Length: 79
Image (cartoon, rainbow, N blue to C red; front, side, top):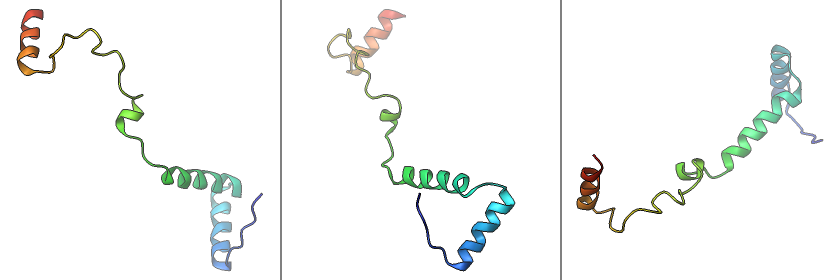
């Protein structure tokens, strides 16, 4: 349990929010605290969100495949 001292104006706003929304203080404050906490965390890169580098993607690829001429030759052989 955390006790917070609010000035009269803020306390009145809180009571109005609770009355209009028909919610408890916990229902109002918990999501706000969680959201703020998450906003303080560094954002994940797209690579992190997708699970990191693929480990076995090019495992069987021939050497030099990243060269344009080699990729073109490989595509021609396949199609």
